[in-house]
Image (cartoon, rainbow, N blue to C red; front, side, top):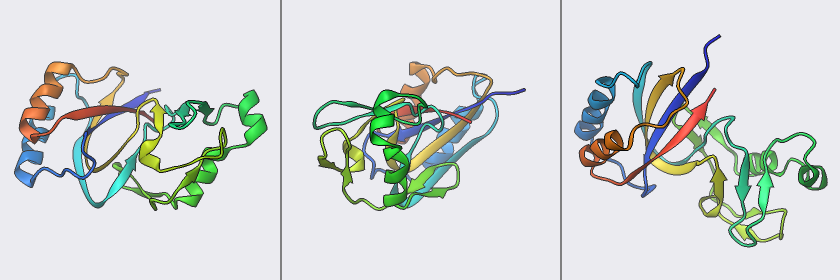
Amino acid sequence: MSINYSIKVVPQDPNYVPDRKLCEMAMDLASKHDKMMGFVSYHVNDEVLFVDPGVNLFSIICPLCKARLQVDNEGDEYEAQHGDWWAAVEDDLHFEKIDDAGYAYENSDIVVPCCSGKVKLGELEFNWPAGLSKFVLVIGAVNTSNLIDEEIIEQFEKILKSPLYQIRCYS
């Protein structure tokens, strides 16, 4: 059985979209590295997408009270008390899957169950990292759970003219 990982590389500025030529140069760079097996693609969306780590999303930290909110951990005492709040958030924000890139959503307030405060999706801290972006470079990395080497990320940053970060996804 094969375990499929992918790395989603996104700009730190969620609204930044490199031009097509730069995107193609980044895809060429990805295809030249042995560690990056599988597929390489990029996605550009008119709206900012929520780019999630797939089943690697374990918890979310509230920016207001710093509580660690569990996501889908059966038997967890906190979840037993508050229910599956993240699934309700996904429903409330009308998450809609857009290709391999991420999810379109409505940018309305989220009520966090820990302190009943209201926050926006981009204010939450995700464990494993997730992000918001109009541009997503998706690199299929079959049978490896490692992130892309920092030297290669720096090359991507030069090509795409933006600071970047990685979101490790598992499916």
